[in-house]
Length: 329
Image (cartoon, rainbow, N blue to C red):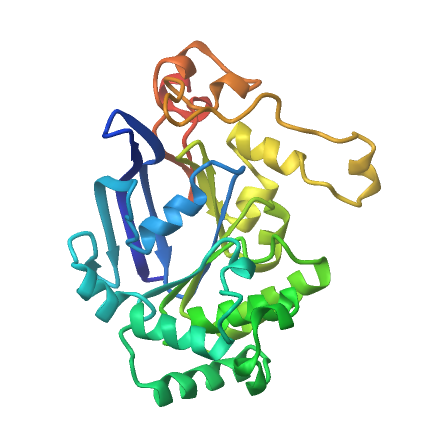
């Protein structure tokens, strides 16, 4: 499968207090997103998932700053493009995003149609109102929203309708990659499934090329993803197919995430509620070596002093853990 996005040694930090403090939110990540796939990104709150999404969008609004690395999309290096080039050739066309807390992103004093025009004119550079309305109506039909919703205010819509509006805005120009940042986190389970189905239908219909689906709930990815990448403390610690990650997890953090999922199966419920002891580290001063070692039940001496490299354990299944390194056999 052809690569759509290539991320190489990406580092992006939040620079605070005049450069005296650096929050290492995305720290040396290398990975690919393939054409036509749904890639899930999972991890605890504060592990850098949303910041990583901003990086793919080339949104380095201060205090976020790109420290190093490359982002290559559709064969083009995006890291040196100007704001005008991003607006003209990248945003909405190559990549688009449903932001986290999209349900609260709609301005309460603007009608949906007016807000869509604001986004299209500023972010996408489209200032023809008739064209924007035509695009909006077409996409509303795709996400199963009635045209009259364009004349409504956000408070008149349900949570599911607001999320569909956010999806319609993000897919106006049929992006090659849609980043969905926790699009189901504030919805009931029935509406969650409907939103997942909408995204898959848009992909099947050619409105979306690929999807990067960000969540803290690894169980959701079973329903939508082709591959899963696991992030912890600004690092990518494991990546593989859905079956590889869910049925043969390698990294201790991945195993702990899966064990902490609430499940209705009686044989699993007997074990009680599992959790990961401790808390994620502060990314201003992360621990040396493997960042998970203070919480890891398998920690060894090398884990505290040397950062593990990402290695291939089986085709398509990579992990960054000393348990699988050559030095440890």
